[in-house]
Image 1 (cartoon, helix red, strand yellow):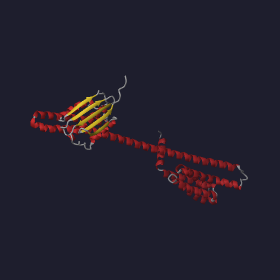
Image 2 (cartoon, helix red, strand yellow; image 1 turned 180 degrees about the horizontal axis):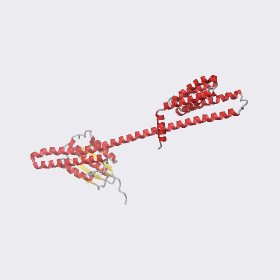
Image 3 (cartoon, one colour; image 1 turned 45 degrees about the vertical axis):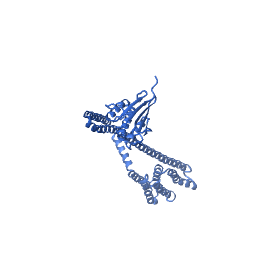
Image 4 (cartoon, helix red, strand yellow; image 1 turned 60 degrees about the horizontal axis):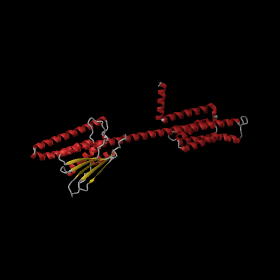
Length: 408
């Protein structure tokens, strides 16, 4: 880019930032042109003083032609009408300001201003010619000169209106582009916000499932360890070992979760060094909970099939959360049953505690666990039903669809 091009860009940027200064300079130039025409003899001597006043009044509104296009054009139109029909000989003082203000009214004014401006300019330009035609043509020039002048004025009028309409269309197009860019930016911000909320929800589910289950197991084993320490010290040692194992596993899960967050990878995918648990890890989970003192068994019906990493993790987390709720709300001595029922197109996971027969079950209080289970299931097209069981206790039922196997 040359130095001249940079100077032009700077001038254009300055003009866009300071339109009043640019229009003020334009008004000064128009006044100097009108003054030059007046003093060179295009205006009779006895009308030069009045022509200068008319030039000042006609060019002053040019300064505010963009901010107040219609009022400024009205002032110039009144001056031009007075000069045309009453102040003969002052045409040179207002002809250029009239054209500039006509262009400004079309370009920057409302839609109806264009039609009104065309009418005013037509009357101002062709009024004197019409009066000349009524009085009769000049004997020396005949009809040819007025016709040529009328054609020239008509061409000027059309050019003014055309340029004004083009500028107006350009402005509207720029405003539309600006509004479109604003809407796109707003949409992008909303998308980022939705992604952040979804990420926050996933982090909340993972942290809750890992920490809540680990702490519930540790608390249950610690309570059992206090009882076992009085009667069987060896059993207390085994309980303490189980507490250490549960704590180390929870710590490993938290470290894996933090590594995913640092790497900005998916929370429910396979992008961590520590593999995510799935349905095949549910028996080990049940065994771990049983070692903590909860009498729980697991049963599998049907033929297990391969699930995606996210769906398998969902089933595992639902069982984990349901067993944690049994320990918290029903007690660690409550018999519990875990069932995995596989069909051709669906996996149903049920966790039911027997509770106390004849006693209304106590529903889990509001928290993140139930919400997290339902959110996980909804992400994979499934559902979670939670409610009391007819035979007593509480039941959690997860249904996950399974994609059909491709035909050979």
